[in-house]
Image 1: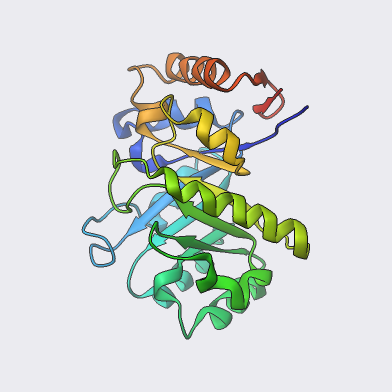
Image 2: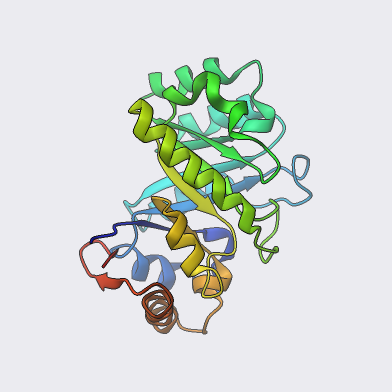
Length: 238
């Protein structure tokens, strides 16, 4: 049996005073970087921006995946298209009436379109355009802040997305976002998303040193899930 997953650190939770050190360490270990863009309206917080993505790119050629938590989705999509952010993931709750237009716009720019579902939002919401998506992100915590309570019931959406993909030959990746850490490794692994977003509780906050934190994360994953760790673009296998 073999399990391969993609790892996507949430840079909102990194230590910005160690920005260069942490990015350079992670560059050859992860599959993408997760960039939270919040406008203070969709969620009560303001975080990263397209400018931040450009700063990361000075040190990295790793794929960038932007998670929009904003009211004016069209404005931010255009900003991200301008800088050629590889994945642009939009809130399902704010694209009703413009979803097809924005997905087409992103694809026309040669980029990939994703949708993010908050814990209360049903997969049914995105069924009209799910076949066009390159990624579906399931929030396993309430959005807007790090350190929120893990909502185990959201893992059922991951299982349902996998079923829909297999039955209909869809091409989207399934990503989970929120409280990805030792306490939840086993149940997350059982739900089997393709992409794990890892933040402060699972990586950056474990120790003061990114290398030590990485080793601890790997050890905890192996201990909790029984899967071994393979060093080929850092995928877990078992």
